[in-house]
Each structure stands twice: as structure tokens, then as C-alpha cells.
Length: 207
Image (cartoon, rainbow, N blue to C red; front, top):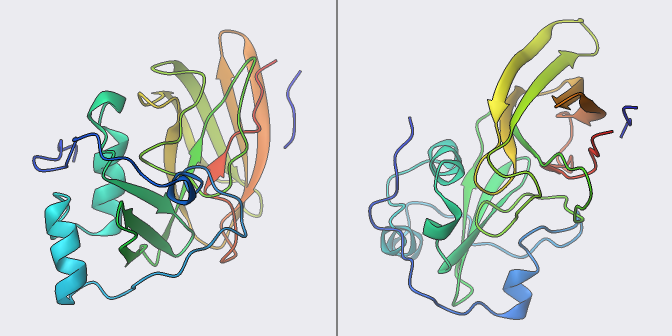
């Protein structure tokens, strides 16, 4: 029963075991009201220095997201978190320096973590610390635009090493997502219309 509800490995991402504060860790899979202040000034000396130190210099939000998605968990940095919001990618370093990179005007990113037995609460997806149950699993994903009936995605994808499968969708739509795996399925409604829509979906229990 269903329920409604350019790859490039970073060359200079720091993988040293720097300890993040408890507050920083809470942004990993955050709720909608856990926004932190940011220095939304890419191009300034402070922001550029922080990004260069993390091995992310010169990359835009989409490039960073696609790059980190493809990075194995063991290679993902502990020196920063990367939280995906509808309109920005927030990079936060261990010393609480924050840089906000604008998301594409025409694309909205949503990451899905289908599961069978256990999940976790999530609203804004973290590329660096969020993990799901089904890692490296082949799932068939269908995504349909509710207003036009257009099928945006209809293909088998493999979940990333963190158990998520990320999708770039058009903005300003409501859509229905169905994920199937080994005879089980789950269906979820999503929206890309609003500035507070979720970028992390962990409520799709396969049954």
C-alpha cells in the first residue's frame, strides 16, 4: 500500500576531523524554523576565503549540490555543513562563518530518502550529515506535474551513498512523486512554489 504524504570529486574539501558544535549539527536535517543568520555576500573577501578554504571556491549552488551528492559518505567533509533551502544553499563552517549562495531561478532541489523500517525528521536537506536507510539502492521514481499531467521523471535511479536521491524540479509547480523498490511503493505530494517548501522528504515509507 502506498502512502500519501558533471560529477567531480572535490579536490580540496577538508576531511580532517574537526568537531562541529551541537548547534551546528542540528542544522543537518533541520526543521522549517531553524534558520540561522547568514553572510549572503559571495564575492566578498570573507566569503571567498571561506569557500576557497573548503575547496568550493568558484562553484555555484547547483555545482556544489551535484558534487556533494556524488561524494561518498566517508569523503564528505566534517569542516562544514551545507543546508539546502528553497532559495539558497547555506554553507556553515566550524567557526560559524556562513555563506549563502543563491539557488537557480528556474530549478528547485528536493532530496528523497525512501525507507522501509526507520527514518528521521527532516525539512531542509543537509548534504554533509543527513543519512537515510537505503544506501545505494535502485529505485524507480515517477514525478508528475499535477496541473498539466506532464511526467517530469520516469526512470530508475540509484540512491546516493547517504541514502537519498536528489531531483531538480521546475519551480512553481505541485507534483506527485512515487518511488518503487522491490514490489513496494510510496507516494508523496511536493510543492516547489513557496519560499518555505521542504527540500528534504523522509516520509516515504515503502509498503
